[in-house]
Image (cartoon, rainbow, N blue to C red; front, side, top):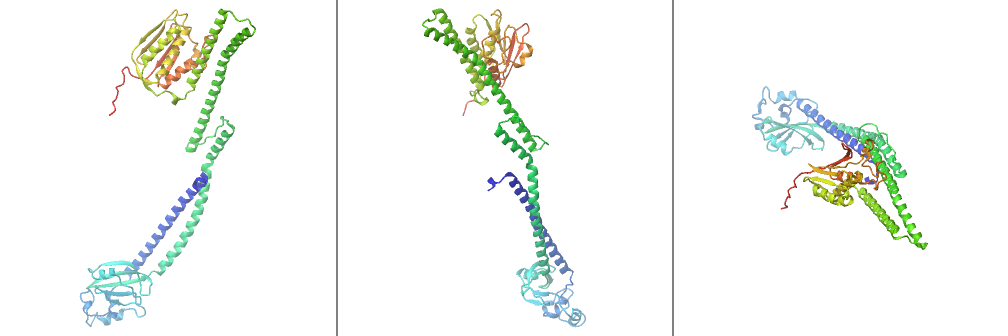
Length: 478
């Protein structure tokens, strides 16, 4: 049932239940406190009433039972004897007093006999001066509060007082507290509804915004944020999420547009060359061997360019968790392998290599591809191979230096953007994705890369990767 209730109704029910429970607990505690206080008042009235055997002796047997009681004469006449005590007792109504003997006998002096319990007998048999209070009943079934006091010589005096007034007072108090509790529950429900409406109003706005975004896909929607509480933080997080999604959508749109633009040129060239071949064959005038060979070579180069572009797009489209599992990589070996792959692509450009050992955790294929891209850029921009390309790896920092025209300073912040190409490189082959792949591979390995104009001309690429000059020890499994 709770799963079908709204958050507002559940919050209202929670607040109302908590307040109602608190009121009910306070009411019950109040009832018990009043009850205890009323009983203490009854006990104080019993303690304040005149006590003494002189109330009981005229109506109970005398003789050896009275012997040894301090201040009470035995079976003797004269001053202090039975005649004097009888003269001092009330003439109309006796208090509810009775005498309990150690052997279990009972002598009732008042008009309200109370049933004797084993606790009363144990008190009568105990040492003088013992006293106890308890709830008891009369022979007629009336509830009374009883005070039992040992007066010595195996005798105990019991005096009682009716609890009818106490019961009536507690019953009235119970009805009052029940009414207060009922009113408190209604008030708590109203307060809970008010609190839920006030507290969930920002959540309602957030819900409407989410529903609007889901319905219209308008990621420019923003929620007004007020305060610094959890609801405000949720609004800030929602705004940040929509901003990130909008940025992701814009990057995706730009990627598709740029990829379409880059693919349009080789596809147009391919279609033109293929149409030329088909027209020559259909017209019965085939091309000569040399032009045909050049045309096929051009077609092959264009296919290779498209294959490279598609591979680069696939490489960049992978998410952060789709790379190969990171293993220990000898980065110097990856750089050496990249140099071997780059040499045949630039037979007229010398590549100077100086490597020192460096081990790290990463994806060896991705790192090798990144170094190849850096070398391809360096070779492409070298001035006709007049100066060598320098490759250095020292203390985890790889530098690749060429002696080309360099990059204008205002363009350096954009060199790692997808499909970005320098003004000096737009006439050269390439897709503009090489450096973006470098940045992604280095970032996945926990490093950083940057390009700068070198002193004396050319570009200096720096790649810094965390690692160690020695291989990590292999921990054997036990």
